[in-house]
Length: 277
Image (cartoon, rainbow, N blue to C red; front, side):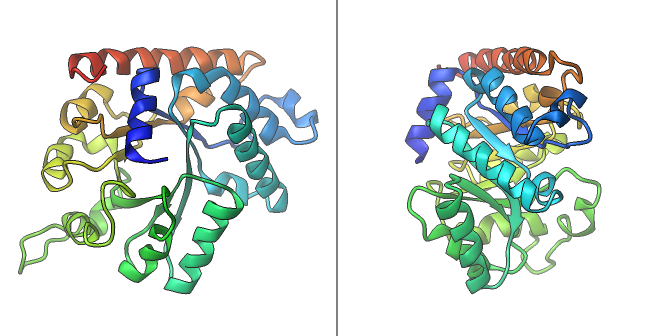
């Protein structure tokens, strides 16, 4: 999926919502544990309830890998289900990979060929040769970690280069633009530091940004839109717990659909205000 196609989906659904499929087997309704694949059963119902309101899904690999081979099987089935039922959904592997070139090439093969994801989150710490193997795939995306919203972000991401005057996350944004373009590279920017989006937009005005942290982590959708929207929307705002765990009872899918619709309606109003729909 390219930028134009992604923006078309945003306009069609009047939404820039990404639903995080962070499915914790310890949090799903107990009756699902009696099924042959509880994680996939949960995901399937969440997807069916939310697909009309969202343009992207983002499974976090840790929730699947923690279950061993069974979890990987659940992930494969989830991806196949989305691809068969909702072909225009943008699919992100939240894997945060990043290693030497030949290893990154195998990660890219796993997520883009074996599992048919549209995008994968990648850590930039090891530099260009660890990222470029992911960029070798046409119409696939790297989503580079730039400025995260966890408390540990201040350990490194705000360190200042005395020579250039750039903070480390600013160096990541500037340097990485030599590796890819707005057609194949996005950036992760945490919603809880939305005021930084204005500065980030000055460095990467055309790129899409994946913004986690709205909802359970306290980020403001209005603030994110105020500082982050560009002429093609340029935002995918992720919500995980607030949607998929809107209820812990048998009505979990229905409540997830309601929560997703509420976010979509907020996003529609923001898109209209910006003249994008």
